Length: 202
Image: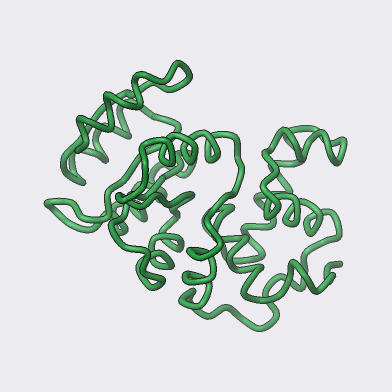
């Protein structure tokens, strides 16, 4: 399956497959050596869990995004993958075009996840303090809402008339204040705590 995915992705003019790995150990070595923008990770690997691999990958290579391939739309599993640092999900039952679209979405800094998956994983997120997100500034709340509505980093720059550097700083602050490891997790946490609809923010 990995080879079939690699061939399909390589056929896209804007995507370059830098390597293919069949185990966690080999994958981590290749990421360290090749420094890709995005890793497509299977949940089940011969030497362990893709969720644990994602956590380790994000710890050692925080700028590398991870798109998770899963055979299940199980809320508990998706929540664990999210909290490990996963930036997108694609089910194995889906079409190759779904994976390609998700990779492009993640590359642009957008957050997009099917509603039924978001609803399922939000219910299984680990508990946060009741006051989580209350210290978001007005500008950080604006950035969070734009992320949740599917805006890319560039679109947020244009919408708020800010520099890329400033937007990235705001995103980093949002992740820190929501105890999130990815934009997708930040949106999920904000959804669970009603931050996106409450109008709260400092």
